[in-house]
Length: 201
Image (cartoon, rainbow, N blue to C red; front, top):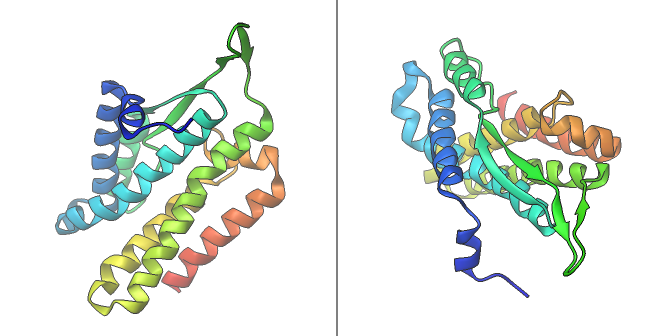
């Protein structure tokens, strides 16, 4: 049975919505920096789209497996992202979707703990969304001259978000993907890194 739009919206708590908004604003600032605040609104669009859909991919795939999943901002990560932007480095880890084991079965109270494969698939979902968004932005920048600058910026940021999150360093997504399937990890981080390099060199 498919969920209605109302059911989907009800899956978000007030705390989760607040955390997503705060994390999006801080991340957009981090990609702008104090020296280039005029780019904040464009970055809010392209970063917000990539970041929010990245986290929603984690959330919805986890829920598809039957887990409880909610985004929570990471205060230290937000602070590092804001401060790092002042020296030209963006630490793109403002928070994460936290997953809890769910009770499965209509009558039996059986707790289903996450498997390595499930964790890997949930983790790679966010990066795949960023790669798709980056590809869409790249196509727009190629075929719509009036939006070229904004679109290529969006492609660059989304390739970066995918590649950064795929670094095989805990607690980043890449460590879970690498632990599940090294070929999937290599393929996704390779595409993300190649896309970013193509736009910058």
